[in-house]
Amino acid sequence: MILVPTSRGKVALYQPLDAQAYLGCSANTLARWRREGWLEGTAVGRGFVYTKDALDECRKLRNLNVRNKEVEYA
Image 1: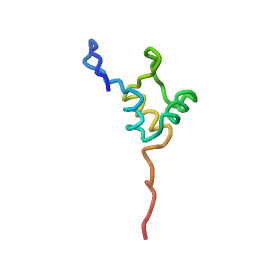
Image 2: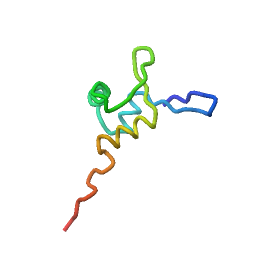
Image 3: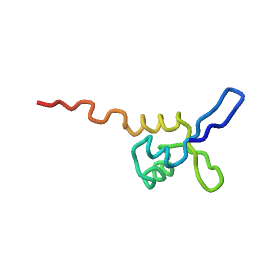
Image 4: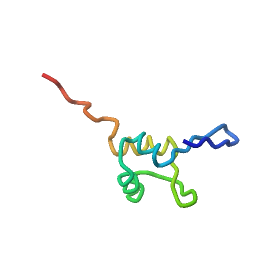
């Protein structure tokens, strides 16, 4: 994670490895979601960085927050 100082404080930018750990996916899945428009990344040099808001929005759009929500154990 990279902390970038701005006029409103510091903004955390997640590198691909950090984003993969946060979302629980592989590098290929992260790249595919970015290409398909599920995840908004910012190009920096030859790579991408992601904000926490963008990662949270992707989790919401892909329904990653509701995994096993309605499972009942008998």
